[in-house]
Length: 60
Image (cartoon, rainbow, N blue to C red; front, side):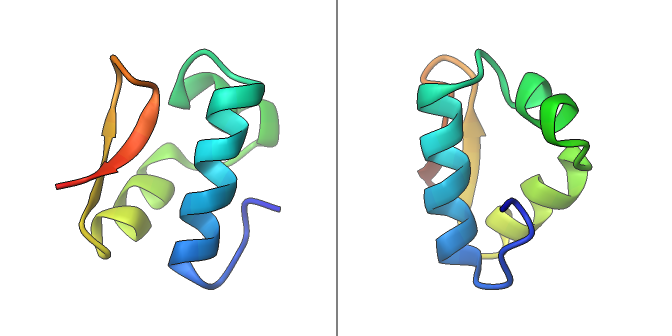
């Protein structure tokens, strides 16, 4: 699920999972055995960054 090729689909899935299942991005990545830096860089490429206070990726 977190392997979506389309970065906007990935954004939607990650934000949904952060909202519904995980307290932090690190927890989400550990749960799904994903590389945190990979997700951050893929979403940074479409001008989104992780906001720890909101626990969501937001537009820069």
